[in-house]
Image 1 (tube, rainbow, N blue to C red):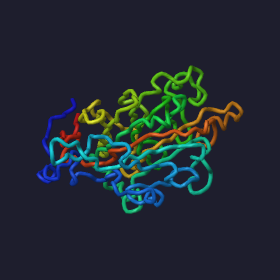
Image 2 (image 1 turned 30 degrees about the vertical axis):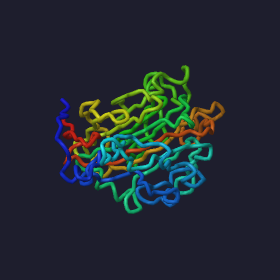
Image 3 (image 1 turned 135 degrees about the vertical axis):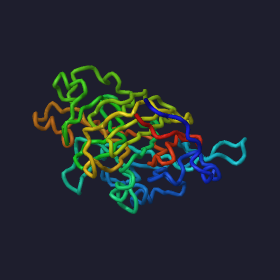
Length: 346
């Protein structure tokens, strides 16, 4: 049974600061773009973001700060001192996009021609590694809010990995996915969930595209089981929180839209296929990673190498992000509106 009893506010300090968000003491990583964060900061990979996983252009070509043009998720907005005034945003929206130049060269070599990707990676003091012992031990909660970029729509015939924690083996501790369903079989090898039985590569679909459920968010565990699914409707912010118990290797998911408080949408479930200890830790990514469709002209071997081969249309596509942070659960799970609930247990 999922325990979601209210535990009250974090502390008197949280009430005095009148912030409708996570208490400062419990926040391990805050990826909510400060109001004074600039495009030059993005280009320089200034904390809290590492912005090197991208194409050949500058980071600010692919990732933009929207300032006051687009309000972030209202879930964490600062309450106004006067009740008749609307809440005040305390962060900027990040617009993350891809285009045909979004080919990443890891280490400056071996370009990933199969993918189009822009990843923003959480970091502290200029390195993601500095965060791992802090945010990936004990029980922690990963918060992120996603909204459609209506001027740069996704192509629902493809599959997108948009939020994930990636250990060194290339798997994902958990992932948020859009588009076609997938099964990850190891680095560079993917099959559709339906292909578990059909035996055909996901990049060579035999059915009509887009596939059923392509327009749904899907929260996946390490083994690519779908823990939670919700329609990716245009307009609202979709708020997620994933509780990770790193010692017992379990997951739980919370979800809401716009200013509605987060609510548990799954029980605490095992995530035992992920490695234990430091081998199971990995960088926290959010962005747009678009996988290819198969190119019939490629050899059979190359058709199975989705990292380096396949068809991409080269279109400009994107997503909007806000509300990115990681917290411990000693003060409960922040659910918005200045409220917390107890950590989820079996």
